[in-house]
Every structure is written in C-alpha cells, then in structure tokens.
Length: 208
Image 1: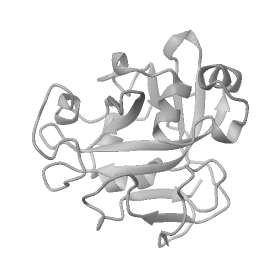
Image 2: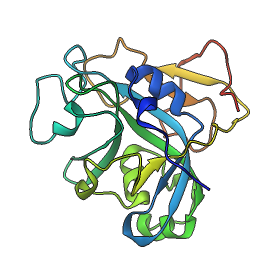
Image 3: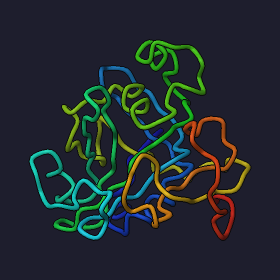
C-alpha cells in the first residue's frame, strides 16, 4: 500500500531532498490509471541564488507554485513539446524544487508504453519529458498536492539499487554549472542517456 510522504519531507533544503528522493517510488493516478516508478535520477534547483532556476528572476504566473508551500507539484511546459515534473521544496517564499529526471517503471508499464508509443521499458521514463508523459502529467497537474494525489512519492523506504550514488552538474543548462546538484544511480540502465562523469556520494548506497 502506497502512502504519500508528509509535507515535512519536502520542507528541507532542495539538495538534501533531491538526494533523499533517490530510490523512492513515485506514484501517479492521472488519467484514471495507476502507474509508478522508482526515482533513479534527480536535479535540485534553488531560488534567487541559482541562475539555472525558473525562480531566479522572481515570481511569474508560470513558476508561482515554486513560491508556495513545499510538497506540491510544479509542472511546466518547455520547448513547445515536453512537460516536466518538479517537487517543490524548502518553505513558502523561498522557491526551490527537485526535477525528476528518470524513473525505473514498476507499475502500469503497459499504460506507460501506450503513452510513450514505444516498448523498451528502459526508455519509458528516461529523461524529464519522458517521465511526465509516461505518468500522464500536463500543466493541469501544476500545483497538485503531493500529500494526496494524483501524484505523490510513497513513504516506503527507498530501495537499494546495488550501486553507488553519483553527483555532478545539472544537464541542459548554461549557468549554475558549478553546482553539483544532479544525483543519480551510477551505471543504472534507467538513468537518462547523458550519465557519464560525476563523483561518488560519500556514504555510497541508498539505505533501505
């Protein structure tokens, strides 16, 4: 039985939350079908001090959810074709979020295949645009409360992946490259295609 994490989990620094999300199960009931996947890659984004963040230049109608309470979904549309799922962190007025970059599909895989139009399970949720499409998320889900659905992270302990956690610069940005705020399971087949490099995280594996 999946139960959502409490708001207190998200009311912490975005970098800490990002690291702690690895190995946890993301559940989504959008579109009338339950799908779920284990989080294997994430990126943290801060506010006014992070030039790569959508919140860097202040509040807009697009990014307003980032400025609210932690524990909500920030779903944005980019490149005229992709939706991306972020989990809002820290505290109201201090915009920060974690971008979910990749999942290992666990439940509702056939539904994901239809939504993505492909069969290879390794590619169903590899990359942030693929994650949102596999889950059935759109801008309609922007602001959804992560405590109750239709999208939430299970409070079950994170699963062990059998390998080290790596960290490195975020992908697809031009500024803020000095921050090693991307975390992923090293050598994991479900991580997005650009996964080379990075440094091991001290402490190694995600605990059970």
